[in-house]
Length: 329
Image (cartoon, rainbow, N blue to C red; front, side, top):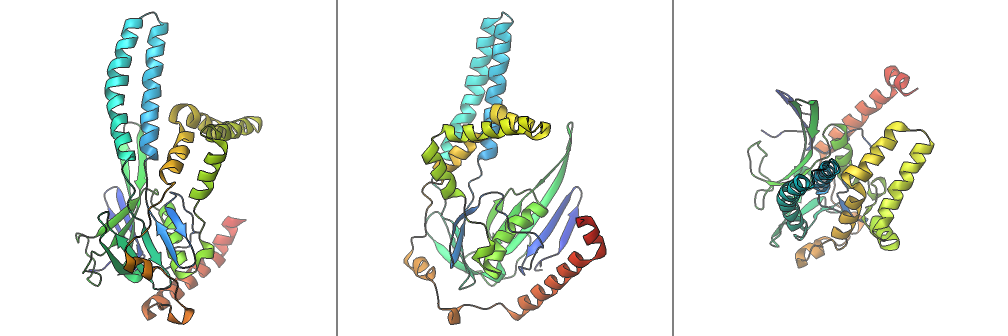
């Protein structure tokens, strides 16, 4: 069985939406929420995933918490207990976790996944250098999300999963348990996953002009110009502006980001890690990445043409409906 776009599966506390194939419009604007766009030009789009921000914030929060506990106990007069906690929890537990984090961060980046809109193909490159080309209309995009219940209440988790056939299996049908090349992005599921998927879908089906440019060069340039503390100054200025505007919620969120989670350092880490993004090196992949004259561009399949036309009509009806207009007023 081959799942198609708009098919939805339900289970206990989970939901799974299929966004492709066929890659039809989702109705959401393209938004690179997770900074997966590494390169973009008129021919191809490179995407990759370096998602270590959550790990950094968790470790930073744990370190701040243990340090605060140690300082509080020391201020209460029990210095030796404070030092014992700092050594056991701060040095033993957090030190080990920081070591594992740094070890993972130092690993080289995987080559990006390249989407070629002229050829309507995707180049998958393994870390070892092996590569193959997948037809664009054989790419599967899935947005699973799940609801978890705990003592703190209910929380929702979701992601965008891109599934590609393995080498030599490009034209075999997809199955839920079929092995493939997978890229998962923690976009949050639902609308967020649709907006992230639209970055890729819109590039291939509409054009590069509707897709946001990669923010990596801009962030790297700002870090290079202002130094490591530039990110902190920017967040602190944002906090001051929110306090002056009496925006209590945003100000508290920014303050937590500055003090508890160390979010500005995430920007610095991302910038340094993505400063030298790997490129495709195989001669055939380099030749495949070159532009083609318009008359040689690959065309949509008739099935996809019909599906896109039907979806665009449906989205227009929904947008123009009285209830939709009423909500937008």
